[in-house]
Amino acid sequence: MTQPRILVTGATGKVGGSVVARLHAAGVPVRALVRGAADLPEGVQAVRGDLGDPASLGAALEGVDAVFLVWPFLSADGAADVIDAIGKHARRVVYLSSAGVGSRAEEPGEAITLFHTELERLIEASGLEWTALRPTGFASNALGWAEEIRTTGVVRAPMAALARPLIHEADTAAVAVRALTTDTLIGARPLLTGPELVTQERQVALIGEAIGRPLRFDETTLDEAAERMRAAGWPADLVDAVLPAQAKMIDDPEPVNDEVERLTGTPARSFRAWARDHAADFR
Image (cartoon, rainbow, N blue to C red; front, side, top):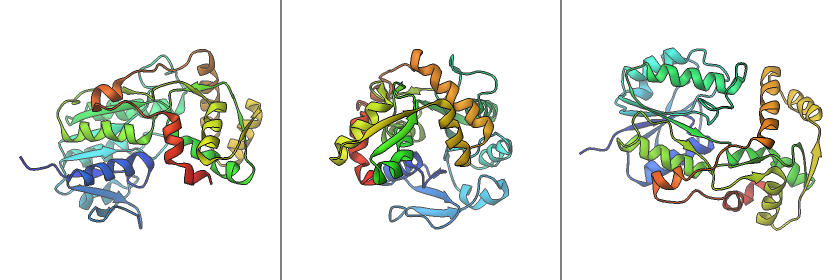
């Protein structure tokens, strides 16, 4: 049986990049959707296109059997046209969704959850074979602290006690590759978590351990955090959604499961392992 040709969107991001690398290493023909120059493994085909312009996707989708879809926008505007374009070429789509979809955390007005919910609905109605991966928080979000850590050794953020089962991008990618290359996850919505709850204060300590340098978590108020997010360009509605949702997790944390191990045969990587893998980003 011939190997499927797979198009990876978000190919320069953490999860998408790991999907590209894993497919390429396994000898699966993989194509990366890019908007400009990109650092990709030798032999990976890069094709220009933009999910914001569905008419630009034809060349990237030509001859493709499956698509790994990472939606880069904060609303579902335009998603129906993109999914329609995918459906004209491919037979399968694996969508990087969110653990908040379909859970008790899903509430009207929660900006991120709303667009993921709509994307899942559109994909399910498309007639394509589909899988919706629902990871918890990404360990790679800690890279947002990298500049503070490099320059001051202090992370100023709210909610030191917020604990989440953060997932390593390599684990999400491993499940994605299984969904793209086998039939075992068609129609599935696996909830993917890291192996344990890790507080934000502990995350900073583990990054310090990985780089051999003591670091400190300086807890700020939610109001201070909101001001910093707005100053950094975050949309107001997203700020108003993200911080309260995270605050609720302090008393009602996300679940921890063994889906990564069940689906891949390898236990999920710890945040300590993630910090070691990314130590160079914090030095």
